[in-house]
Image 1 (cartoon, each protein chain N blue to C red):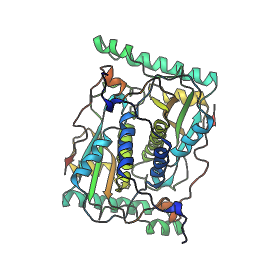
Image 2: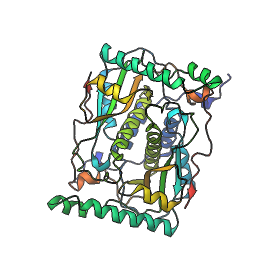
Image 3: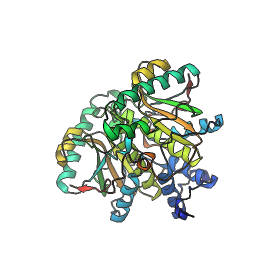
Image 4: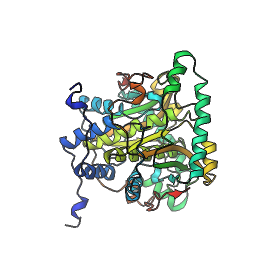
Length: 218
Length: 218
């Protein structure tokens, strides 16, 4: 018996599959957080799980920044306010009124905030799999973000992905290496409420398309 | 009691969390498939689960193409062979020998193959969240791919993401709308074997970095 018991491939039963579907259904983009701090060990566990995400050429190009200082957080909030004002100006009439009512970030309250970068110059992976599709490096970072998101929800933690930001401004404000590009800015915390419908659907911004997963055949 | 029982938020217990961690650990990029066909209903269920992925502005921009005809599959295989030959030419010495030995796609055997596109011109979501980061639309497609990947593994199905392809060639070969951009080409099928270590690690191409999830603080 050369292998330890822990190396036996797991089988996932129908009960697990059903719970996994519930996890997908109840994951939300959270913008309304309770201010309670999160245990540091839990945040570190979530980061370690994100590290199990797939990556092109096994490059593990994700780089995490915990944004904690009042100064850094203020810079991000200021950038969001400016970008959100610009975005609002693109809408008119009822759509503009609706946009102005939406809550699109939890930056004031979320106790944990993570900026997630892609190390564009990493040598890890030796370039495998990204010659014709260099964007695969950033896509790998996205799968790490999504892994963290699902794991967080399974531990009762809400995650919100804020993209109404100027990546250049955030990168500069955080003083990270020049060859890191911002992929995501995440707010983490206990959610005020839970729901199986996206907030944008409940607020009337957009409806779910039922046929969006229907494949065409070639 | 206005809400049905199914609308009660789920709680995920320690047993589920432990199994979810196993799912993350045992998900693999699979290149060695058994030829057995997959039930059509299962493939459709996986696509429906992918549709639960997060998307910027609730845009659901993923578009799935099931690549089934001999002609389309041959075009993809031919493109892979050409791109892989080009990629090999970038390496020399032992690294080139190692690259040449790697099996980097399961295109000959995988019974189900999916090309996953991003509909760059979708009006769904009304542009919300992608003014300063237009790449969010493609990142949304990546989370759908990753959702499908995890769900597939939970159902015992292996997934391999082939990126050694020229997106323009694949897009042209499949005759999809001009404003769809290729994000991923996926092989699905029963895996020949299961492992908790990436094949690139086992083959000596790249080692796991233990500190890649360590966050810096700002």
